[in-house]
Length: 114
Ligand SMILES: [Zn+2]
Image (cartoon, rainbow, N blue to C red; front, side):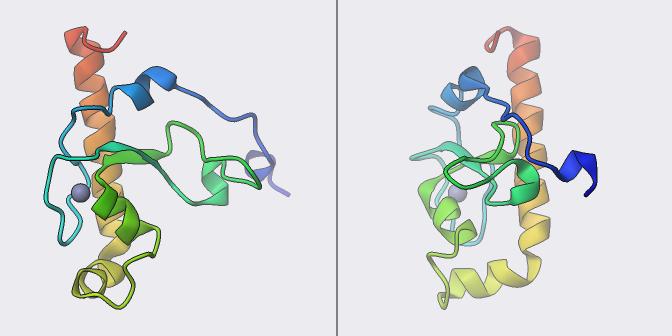
C-alpha cells in the first residue's frame, strides 16, 4: 500500500473549526440560503483521514450551512437540489474547499485567526 494512503494521525485544528461560527456559507450548493448554521463540514472520505469512529482531518472540509452539509452527505437525494448537485458535485466541493482555504488564510493574515 502507498504509505501516504495508510491510516494517519488525524490533524486537529480547533481554532479553524471554531472560526466557522458567524461565517457565511462558503459552499453555496444548489438551494443554499446563505449564512446560518455554518460549521466546518468534514469530507466523508477515507483519503481525507476519515475512518471508523474518526472524522476526516480538520483541514479536509469546508465552511458550510446545514443545507449544504445535508446535500453533500446524501440526505437530500431525490430532491431538485440533489439533481443539480450530483452531476457537478466535485466542482461544488473543490470550490467550497478553495473558498474555505482562502477565508482561513484571510483570517490569519488579518490577525483574526492566530
Ligand atoms: Zn450553504
